[in-house]
Image (cartoon, rainbow, N blue to C red; front, side, top):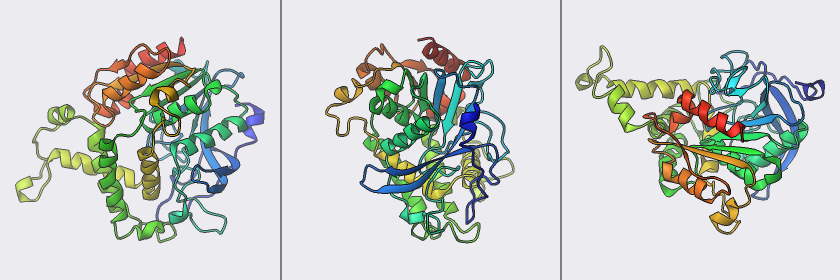
Length: 381
């Protein structure tokens, strides 16, 4: 990181309230980008973005990595130092890895509306209270507009590559459509041109589980004593979501009808698959904010790259980046036909790069060898 960029570093005190964003804050950097005009006509004041970087910026080697729904800026590295989990793509990014940080300058921001340092519902508003229910509804395009301001603050005029999977793929696609001259290469992993009715249908009970939790308090729970937030609802939402992230093939092979050791479902115990889902729910409620989960899920529901731009073909013809589109053979959240649609309409894309995997949507996080091949192809274009 150059000295000029180091001036953007700010260390925040630990968050307060029912949920705390991975406190204490450690090695994340923060940039204040001021007010942001949103698509709904409102202005969100004093926006702060958390981000991390790896490598050295030489003026033309910046790579933007965009995380999925419950991810964050901690793409690579261990847990600790303010990070509740290890890097979610550590196998892909670092010295000598697919995105070699001896060559590339990698930037990963936390998304607008998130809960790991970027302004969101759990952040403190100007009146000293958490935003809570007052946090405005935002869109994927709002998220990207904020990321563009981060690029400006860091002195990055053009990304050598923008990489994104799932929700990150939605943002990556909008980057290439909103700011085509600023994106040289583009990777879209397991993501669609628009959220479908099926995807919105899966999201609906997740949002309802959170909002129906008696500890939701209309979204204004952040200043209650710790432990009084809608954690049960968030856990239910995570269980539902996780079933869309993995495949029936994996579940049947890995768990079948086995019981959790020492437990008999006929006597009130759990099947192994139930224990697995409980585990993932428990992990999430300790590191993620329910209101951010709602805000980001609603933004994903609103994703439609063709909105206000004519046909889908007309929207995707704006993309000038050298593009690779990849999808998982077993993805039941964003099925392969959605990536095939992107590949058919983005100029210069011949076909979809297949990730042949039993791991469903999460293949974009798990299948390291295939992902290395896809990244190598993109970065050689």
